[in-house]
Image 1 (spheres, rainbow, N blue to C red):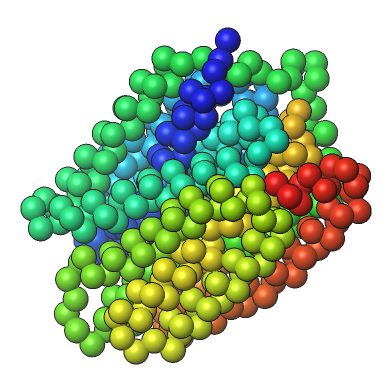
Image 2: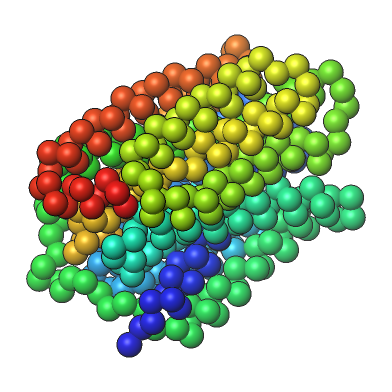
Length: 399
């Protein structure tokens, strides 16, 4: 028999690894650009490959965990991430870097989806708050890469630090082996691929997926391009140390960690739609401040606002999905992450091409445009929930 606190801790450990994955490329893109003489467009290709790997992992995990359970999928995904990080540290060519970036993304995609579904499964009645708390561990993992690189770059080479972080995955693997997990939710006879695709017919599910596609694109741009933005725009007129560029990324992810920790309590008392639209306003304020910033400290403040504003959408929207589809949470989360990551790939690659032509300053304009679309789609989600089974939707909107 499994114990919910231990299982939730396993989800948090897996999400911490996914945080490392999500920030891995943004943390080392300056290192890779220098080692392989990459252009902005080539970096854009890498930033698209990472979510493409996450996309592939997201497609795999849902039906598998619904049918077979979580343990071995989490273990395999963690080991794949570790292998990818080791490869990124020591690869000798552009082709190998592309392969290992994809590999890291694939393992991360499995971890992201499976840990969210697992946390939702053991958090009935408080999914919004628990998923926000789970997101805190994403932020802790995300902070691991840039903060470790910033702290140790004076003493060790960046490849050596990345390799050391890759070895850390063995710790959660051991934990996954020791604890009991919830049993599979579906027998082979009950599983249906057609039923999985049928989720897209639900307007709530479709609008939520599109909203998260834009949200994922904004998070991907911020995580993958923030160090580059600080290097090429904020600190363009000075020969900045590596730690100063990494601090911009630390500000984004650190603010997201703190905001999600606050949200884990706030969502128990404040209606979720209020939190959603307030977060959009905070993100917009950060983008405008970064656009008009003339100093390093003001840019750091803007990065803090961006991270805080981006914190709410995923845990809140995923709590709606968990409440609506408790008996096929793996498949539902798999499908919605597929949609979200298509948005991440499209927005990241498009921004890479745009930055190659017009410069990295376009980041703030792209963010503001994405925010406008996100607000419209989230409004449609909330509206549909109000018309979907009044008692259930009321619980959803308060979660």
